[in-house]
Image 1 (cartoon, rainbow, N blue to C red):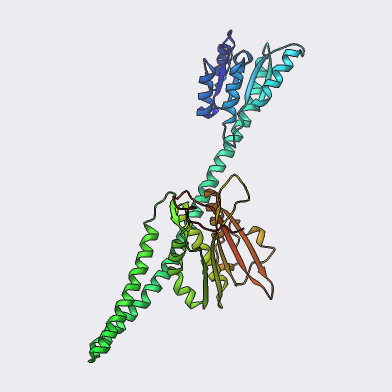
Image 2: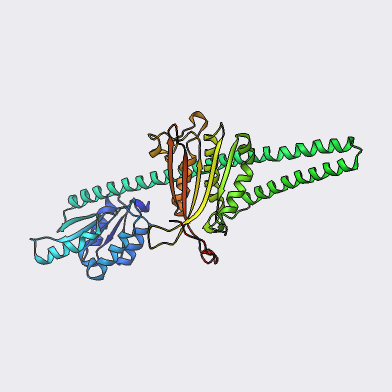
Length: 393
């Protein structure tokens, strides 16, 4: 395997060939490279360690190999076994030592080499490199597991919204069925017209719900300019039956002018839908849901304004002891009915897109409820700032 081989770069003398012959006799995979550029390519392709003579790292070559090693992924600390000349410490040897310090994981071997010293040093380097590859594999497995959890939570959100859509469509369809029955038994033309108008209004309601649903599933999977208020309205339309059933009143505060952000519409919708759904779960006995969109100045002068989207409820609130961990996977305030993945997914999507999520909550007798805020950099839509929106402090 390329990941277990030893690279050898010793362009002067017979060191490279002698070392390669020794390793091959012991069944250790190795590869002799002729130049530093070839060494760099092979390190990037995968290797266990490299044995390099100090003559190969003179002048600009030292900087070149330093750049290659700095580009390693976070899990990697490539081992470099450097063959140096033996003898006492001199001004020149101390200068070279300081130059080699940025290379990181360097093991020095003085020449002339003893085979057993070389092999034991190489064994240590390869064993450490193997552990690095194990860390890499564990990180990849964790990433795959996290992606699977994200997908499962997205399916759960879709299922909850589908149930809301089915309920929302069922109500007007039942009304249309009843109105058609009345039409069959009614002789008055005036009442018949009234029933027809009502039936037409209910079917228009079904059409509107269908449009919102199709918009959700036809959205692009890449960042585009998104009207956040339109996304919010769409979610409220789909959650309308739950809001009515739970006796939750909704207050929405948005600027008079459209604000665009550059975002993946589906991911933004999933975040908002999760927050609204959580607020509804916390207000099963009724309450108030307050949604607010505004622009804020960024604390950093290097970035532009940010859109602040807040979802506030008068629900049961979050225990202060639980609050610091709410964004961790499998932490839930809903007992056996919650998966504990919703807020974790929100945090993951926020981190991926460069958003910030904040939460405040209280469970006191006088003030009870939770506020989630999402800060999103305002996109570069042509009319995003020219529209004269006032910035809130």
